[in-house]
Length: 257
Image 1 (tube, rainbow, N blue to C red):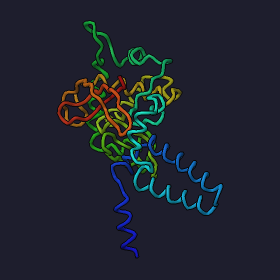
Image 2: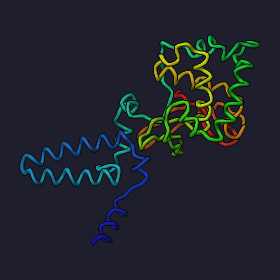
Image 3: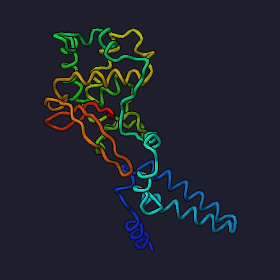
Image 4: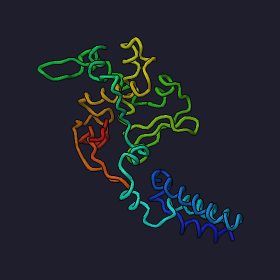
Protein backbone atom coordinates (compact mmCIF):
# COMPACT_ATOMS: atom_id res chain seq x y z
CA UNK A 1 0.00 0.00 0.00
CA UNK A 2 2.86 2.35 0.87
CA UNK A 3 4.47 1.67 -2.50
CA UNK A 4 1.20 2.43 -4.30
CA UNK A 5 0.85 5.75 -2.48
CA UNK A 6 4.43 6.73 -3.37
CA UNK A 7 3.83 5.84 -7.00
CA UNK A 8 0.67 7.95 -7.04
CA UNK A 9 2.58 10.91 -5.59
CA UNK A 10 5.26 10.61 -8.26
CA UNK A 11 2.65 10.49 -11.01
CA UNK A 12 0.84 13.54 -9.66
CA UNK A 13 3.93 15.59 -8.87
CA UNK A 14 4.90 18.32 -11.35
CA UNK A 15 8.22 19.84 -10.12
CA UNK A 16 8.12 22.56 -12.81
CA UNK A 17 5.06 24.07 -11.09
CA UNK A 18 5.69 23.22 -7.42
CA UNK A 19 8.21 23.87 -4.68
CA UNK A 20 10.55 26.74 -5.54
CA UNK A 21 8.97 26.87 -9.03
CA UNK A 22 5.43 27.31 -7.72
CA UNK A 23 3.62 30.21 -9.39
CA UNK A 24 1.78 32.21 -6.72
CA UNK A 25 -0.80 33.80 -9.11
CA UNK A 26 -1.71 30.42 -10.64
CA UNK A 27 -1.93 28.75 -7.23
CA UNK A 28 -4.11 31.56 -5.87
CA UNK A 29 -6.52 31.33 -8.81
CA UNK A 30 -6.88 27.57 -8.40
CA UNK A 31 -7.40 27.79 -4.63
CA UNK A 32 -10.18 30.32 -5.21
CA UNK A 33 -11.82 28.08 -7.85
CA UNK A 34 -11.50 25.04 -5.57
CA UNK A 35 -13.13 26.97 -2.72
CA UNK A 36 -16.05 28.01 -4.92
CA UNK A 37 -16.53 24.43 -6.16
CA UNK A 38 -16.38 23.03 -2.61
CA UNK A 39 -18.98 25.49 -1.33
CA UNK A 40 -21.27 24.76 -4.29
CA UNK A 41 -21.09 21.00 -3.70
CA UNK A 42 -21.57 21.47 0.07
CA UNK A 43 -24.98 23.01 -0.58
CA UNK A 44 -26.18 19.56 -1.64
CA UNK A 45 -23.85 17.41 0.48
CA UNK A 46 -21.48 18.56 3.21
CA UNK A 47 -19.33 15.38 3.14
CA UNK A 48 -19.04 15.65 -0.65
CA UNK A 49 -18.02 19.31 -0.33
CA UNK A 50 -15.30 18.39 2.18
CA UNK A 51 -14.11 15.62 -0.13
CA UNK A 52 -13.90 18.03 -3.08
CA UNK A 53 -11.93 20.50 -0.97
CA UNK A 54 -9.48 17.83 0.18
CA UNK A 55 -8.99 16.37 -3.29
CA UNK A 56 -8.53 19.83 -4.81
CA UNK A 57 -5.94 20.81 -2.19
CA UNK A 58 -4.01 17.60 -2.82
CA UNK A 59 -3.94 18.14 -6.58
CA UNK A 60 -2.87 21.78 -6.23
CA UNK A 61 -0.15 20.78 -3.76
CA UNK A 62 1.37 18.11 -6.01
CA UNK A 63 0.66 19.57 -9.46
CA UNK A 64 0.71 23.32 -8.85
CA UNK A 65 -2.75 23.88 -10.29
CA UNK A 66 -6.15 22.21 -10.50
CA UNK A 67 -7.60 23.54 -13.76
CA UNK A 68 -5.72 22.38 -16.91
CA UNK A 69 -4.11 25.23 -18.83
CA UNK A 70 -4.00 27.53 -15.80
CA UNK A 71 -0.69 29.29 -16.70
CA UNK A 72 -2.03 30.21 -20.15
CA UNK A 73 -5.38 31.36 -18.77
CA UNK A 74 -3.76 33.44 -16.00
CA UNK A 75 -1.33 35.05 -18.44
CA UNK A 76 -4.11 35.86 -20.91
CA UNK A 77 -6.83 37.17 -18.61
CA UNK A 78 -5.05 38.61 -15.54
CA UNK A 79 -3.98 42.26 -15.91
CA UNK A 80 -0.22 42.80 -15.52
CA UNK A 81 -0.81 45.09 -12.51
CA UNK A 82 -2.49 42.18 -10.71
CA UNK A 83 0.30 39.71 -11.54
CA UNK A 84 2.81 42.30 -10.32
CA UNK A 85 1.32 42.06 -6.78
CA UNK A 86 2.52 38.46 -6.58
CA UNK A 87 5.92 39.00 -8.20
CA UNK A 88 8.77 38.19 -5.78
CA UNK A 89 11.60 38.07 -8.30
CA UNK A 90 12.70 41.67 -8.33
CA UNK A 91 14.35 43.17 -5.32
CA UNK A 92 14.34 46.82 -6.45
CA UNK A 93 11.89 49.04 -4.55
CA UNK A 94 10.90 52.41 -5.99
CA UNK A 95 10.66 55.01 -3.27
CA UNK A 96 10.05 58.53 -4.60
CA UNK A 97 11.03 60.12 -1.28
CA UNK A 98 14.63 59.01 -1.75
CA UNK A 99 16.98 60.12 -4.54
CA UNK A 100 19.63 57.40 -4.51
CA UNK A 101 22.32 59.29 -6.38
CA UNK A 102 21.92 62.38 -4.20
CA UNK A 103 22.11 60.29 -1.04
CA UNK A 104 25.20 58.38 -2.15
CA UNK A 105 26.82 61.65 -3.20
CA UNK A 106 26.01 63.39 0.09
CA UNK A 107 27.70 60.69 2.18
CA UNK A 108 30.87 60.71 0.09
CA UNK A 109 30.34 57.44 -1.73
CA UNK A 110 30.13 58.71 -5.32
CA UNK A 111 31.36 61.83 -7.08
CA UNK A 112 31.05 63.47 -10.48
CA UNK A 113 34.11 63.35 -12.70
CA UNK A 114 34.31 64.25 -16.40
CA UNK A 115 30.53 64.50 -16.60
CA UNK A 116 29.96 61.05 -15.16
CA UNK A 117 29.39 59.55 -11.72
CA UNK A 118 31.81 57.10 -10.12
CA UNK A 119 32.86 55.83 -6.71
CA UNK A 120 35.15 58.05 -4.69
CA UNK A 121 38.67 56.68 -4.37
CA UNK A 122 38.45 56.35 -0.59
CA UNK A 123 35.14 54.47 -0.61
CA UNK A 124 36.13 52.23 -3.52
CA UNK A 125 39.32 51.23 -1.72
CA UNK A 126 37.46 50.39 1.51
CA UNK A 127 34.63 48.59 -0.28
CA UNK A 128 36.99 46.49 -2.40
CA UNK A 129 39.07 45.36 0.57
CA UNK A 130 35.93 44.57 2.59
CA UNK A 131 34.47 42.55 -0.31
CA UNK A 132 37.65 40.44 -0.35
CA UNK A 133 37.14 39.56 3.33
CA UNK A 134 33.37 39.02 3.09
CA UNK A 135 33.43 36.57 0.16
CA UNK A 136 35.66 34.22 2.17
CA UNK A 137 32.96 33.74 4.82
CA UNK A 138 29.70 35.62 4.11
CA UNK A 139 27.83 33.69 6.83
CA UNK A 140 30.12 35.18 9.48
CA UNK A 141 29.40 38.68 8.21
CA UNK A 142 25.66 37.98 8.20
CA UNK A 143 25.97 37.25 11.91
CA UNK A 144 28.24 40.22 12.64
CA UNK A 145 26.42 42.86 10.59
CA UNK A 146 22.80 41.70 10.65
CA UNK A 147 22.59 39.43 13.69
CA UNK A 148 21.68 36.25 11.77
CA UNK A 149 23.72 33.79 13.86
CA UNK A 150 22.30 30.65 12.20
CA UNK A 151 22.04 32.00 8.67
CA UNK A 152 22.39 29.74 5.66
CA UNK A 153 22.94 31.04 2.13
CA UNK A 154 21.16 29.10 -0.61
CA UNK A 155 21.39 29.58 -4.36
CA UNK A 156 17.95 29.03 -5.85
CA UNK A 157 17.77 29.34 -9.61
CA UNK A 158 17.95 33.04 -10.40
CA UNK A 159 18.17 34.19 -6.79
CA UNK A 160 20.32 33.99 -3.68
CA UNK A 161 18.28 33.39 -0.53
CA UNK A 162 19.32 33.88 3.09
CA UNK A 163 17.56 31.52 5.49
CA UNK A 164 17.80 32.00 9.26
CA UNK A 165 16.21 29.61 11.74
CA UNK A 166 14.24 28.02 8.91
CA UNK A 167 12.79 31.32 7.63
CA UNK A 168 13.71 33.26 4.51
CA UNK A 169 15.02 36.67 5.65
CA UNK A 170 16.51 38.02 2.43
CA UNK A 171 16.42 37.41 -1.31
CA UNK A 172 18.93 38.96 -3.70
CA UNK A 173 19.71 38.57 -7.41
CA UNK A 174 22.90 36.56 -6.74
CA UNK A 175 25.56 35.61 -4.20
CA UNK A 176 27.73 38.35 -5.72
CA UNK A 177 25.05 40.93 -4.87
CA UNK A 178 24.85 39.58 -1.31
CA UNK A 179 28.63 39.84 -0.84
CA UNK A 180 28.59 43.41 -2.19
CA UNK A 181 25.78 44.43 0.19
CA UNK A 182 27.36 42.82 3.25
CA UNK A 183 30.60 44.63 2.49
CA UNK A 184 28.80 47.95 2.03
CA UNK A 185 26.39 47.96 4.99
CA UNK A 186 28.86 49.00 7.69
CA UNK A 187 30.62 51.46 5.36
CA UNK A 188 27.32 53.20 4.58
CA UNK A 189 26.29 53.12 8.22
CA UNK A 190 29.54 54.83 9.20
CA UNK A 191 28.83 57.58 6.65
CA UNK A 192 25.11 58.02 7.29
CA UNK A 193 23.99 59.47 10.61
CA UNK A 194 20.44 58.22 10.25
CA UNK A 195 21.14 54.84 8.59
CA UNK A 196 19.23 52.90 11.24
CA UNK A 197 16.27 55.28 10.86
CA UNK A 198 15.98 54.63 7.13
CA UNK A 199 13.23 52.21 6.12
CA UNK A 200 14.12 48.79 4.74
CA UNK A 201 13.14 49.96 1.25
CA UNK A 202 15.40 53.04 1.50
CA UNK A 203 18.37 50.98 2.69
CA UNK A 204 17.68 48.42 -0.02
CA UNK A 205 17.47 51.09 -2.69
CA UNK A 206 20.78 52.64 -1.64
CA UNK A 207 22.51 49.25 -1.64
CA UNK A 208 21.04 48.32 -5.02
CA UNK A 209 22.00 51.70 -6.47
CA UNK A 210 25.51 51.29 -5.11
CA UNK A 211 25.99 47.94 -6.87
CA UNK A 212 25.57 49.70 -10.22
CA UNK A 213 28.94 51.38 -9.60
CA UNK A 214 30.85 48.11 -9.25
CA UNK A 215 33.51 47.79 -11.96
CA UNK A 216 34.32 44.20 -10.98
CA UNK A 217 32.20 41.23 -9.95
CA UNK A 218 32.63 40.60 -6.20
CA UNK A 219 32.96 36.85 -6.83
CA UNK A 220 35.06 36.36 -9.99
CA UNK A 221 36.36 39.90 -10.74
CA UNK A 222 34.72 39.82 -14.17
CA UNK A 223 33.39 43.00 -15.80
CA UNK A 224 29.65 43.73 -15.32
CA UNK A 225 27.53 45.17 -18.14
CA UNK A 226 23.93 46.27 -18.63
CA UNK A 227 21.72 43.81 -20.50
CA UNK A 228 18.03 44.08 -21.36
CA UNK A 229 16.08 40.89 -21.89
CA UNK A 230 12.60 39.46 -21.76
CA UNK A 231 11.91 37.35 -18.69
CA UNK A 232 9.20 34.70 -19.02
CA UNK A 233 7.42 33.12 -16.09
CA UNK A 234 4.61 30.60 -16.46
CA UNK A 235 1.98 33.35 -16.59
CA UNK A 236 3.82 36.62 -17.22
CA UNK A 237 6.33 38.28 -19.56
CA UNK A 238 8.32 41.39 -18.63
CA UNK A 239 11.30 43.36 -19.89
CA UNK A 240 14.11 43.52 -17.35
CA UNK A 241 17.36 45.51 -17.39
CA UNK A 242 20.09 43.61 -15.56
CA UNK A 243 23.58 44.67 -14.47
CA UNK A 244 25.40 41.37 -14.60
CA UNK A 245 28.88 39.92 -14.75
CA UNK A 246 30.12 39.01 -18.22
CA UNK A 247 32.21 36.15 -16.84
CA UNK A 248 30.16 34.24 -14.24
CA UNK A 249 26.76 35.69 -15.30
CA UNK A 250 25.97 36.80 -11.71
CA UNK A 251 23.26 39.47 -11.60
CA UNK A 252 24.28 42.43 -9.44
CA UNK A 253 21.07 44.42 -9.89
CA UNK A 254 17.98 44.45 -12.02
CA UNK A 255 15.01 46.69 -12.61
CA UNK A 256 11.85 46.15 -14.59
CA UNK A 257 11.93 48.29 -17.71
